Length: 290
Image (cartoon, rainbow, N blue to C red; front, side, top):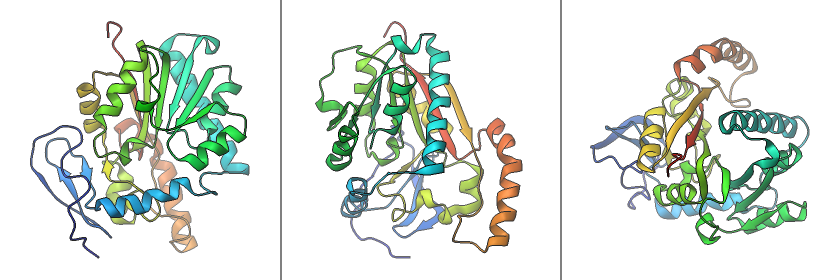
């Protein structure tokens, strides 16, 4: 594996731990992933240049434009997440203001509007943000911190597959907390680096592969997610994990892939109950007195 001589883009635990960081046994193209001995967070050795190179994919003209069954699947996932948010808030959709941070082409914004929520998005990649607006969605270009929303403006914020890209996520989480109403919900989705998928696939897992998933430099687990939530002033209202896999389709002989998929389906429920699914969803609440 190629080792990069430059300093890693992420040099310390983004959760805020001061415990030693050691090499893990997971070796990817950028070198061995490092592990915080305090919270278990995994960190990439990717340089700043490598990070910037792989982040460019998120502004490509054809990025994140699902069709057919994949689009329908994402819409169904969005509806499930909105239903959980509604249950936690105890508010009607029409009374709930939602902001999707890092919304890409705005599929979640569209699903929320269709379900009756007052939803909008903010997206730093100019080309995909413009594509969202061209589709008639209320999406602005830029970072959340640049929008200067009023204090307590939103009932719900979502960060879908964002936090793993950040070297220092605490300033963003602080801004999320500021613009949320008291008792508002921040929903964070990312991958679980302590999942059965990560244990079984190791460096084969596409989530660790910066060629397939650009900009992935920081890998959370339920412990590190709870710790960073507390550091940012949130309470964990609900933390879910889901799904298991052992092989990527197309990289494995069909027979082995099918067998692995069957076994993974059988393990989905145990993984969810044990907190070992590879999808990590954290529903974080701003304290009511915050």
